[in-house]
Image 1: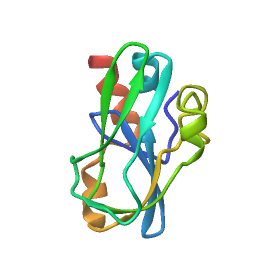
Image 2: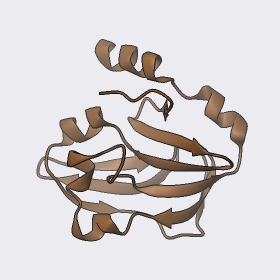
Image 3: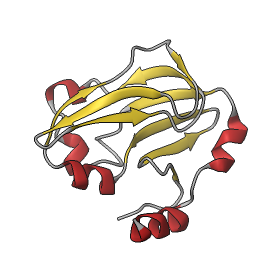
Image 4: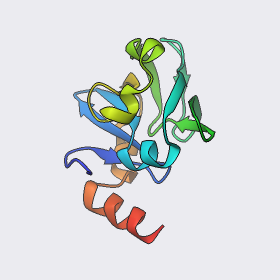
Length: 126
């Protein structure tokens, strides 16, 4: 399941644009590879990151994996529901399992991300 209308990274993050802001999470492919997610560590609102920089971690029964910022951004909000229900990333990665809401600092970076068809081809080749 790869929703259209989102932008994807080769590190398996997605971003949904909302004007000058965006909502970020990890893909269904990523959560499936990780297995049952037990903990999500997210950045504090107000922090700024460059595209590709580590912004948090996801812990599962299998491993710990880093989350990367798909674009240069400022953290506006984190999904506090994941503190008590990290499994939302497994059950609903594109809706209730979103991770952060960001202010996009360099909108042109979005053009460098993959669309759904390109992401689908990328994971098929992996």
